Length: 159
Image (tube, rainbow, N blue to C red; front, top):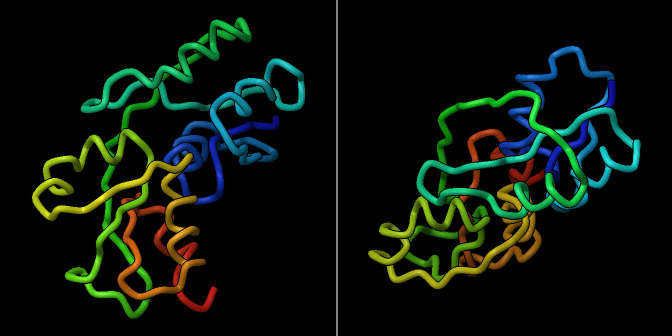
């Protein structure tokens, strides 16, 4: 069975897919929630996993709208705690971080902290993408990002 999820590797969606679809033959990362849903609709994959709701940020509208557009149905739900981390490049210090990158639900979950620290913020498509962007900048103090525990090892210096 082929399963699509919101990529790249290291996202909460990959973690959920790994937990739920233990017998999957292949997990395929997609660039966006609509791409994940469209891959089921087109027959490229058998099933997919997308976020539907965040306890703080609320409904993930792209997922709900996509279910309607592609006439897909929810088979099951997975509930698991999410832990976010603020990380930066190897030489950055927390005091130097000025800008934070992450997905809207993660930014919403950490809005009080972001406001308290006076960080500017930008949105990206996934927490793992945020980690990749910060790593590619390679500028100490350029930015930090809010990511899940599962993707810290994917973007460590030297990988």
